[in-house]
Amino acid sequence: MTEQSNHPASGAAAQFDALMAQVMAVADRFGHRQHVHLTWLAVREHGTSAAITLISDGIRRTARYAGAPQKYHATISEAWVRLVALHATDDTDDFDAFAQHYPALLDKRLLARHYRSTTLASSAARQRWVEPDLVALPPAA
Image (cartoon, rainbow, N blue to C red):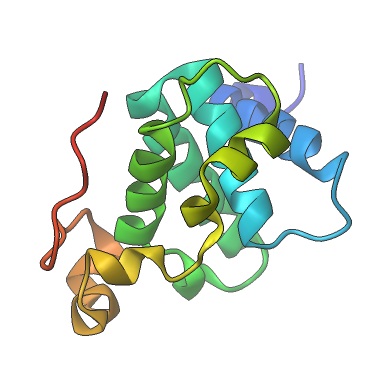
């Protein structure tokens, strides 16, 4: 038994790593599109609530490992999971078709429709979920 498998979060870490491996198998870099792809996979495989935790913890862990824990942002992470989840249950099993059908999700500025920049820049939004202050996110399907 490895040291990592004794860690209580190792199951979630392994799930995140497996999803990341799927995304990176078809990508040469990890940009916004790959973030959306990772989130789409997480929502489809684990459901929205579990995906929020899985993606948030995975990004937090990755940022910490990279020596940049300040790059983790709780509200942005959760908001993207919620937005992707609105459409992730459609009938397609192909991410490229999904992305083509919902191109707004590939716009990194999408959250600006829902949040003031000052709200997202706040320490509260970086540390925990903060509701949108411009336009509410659509309700989950």
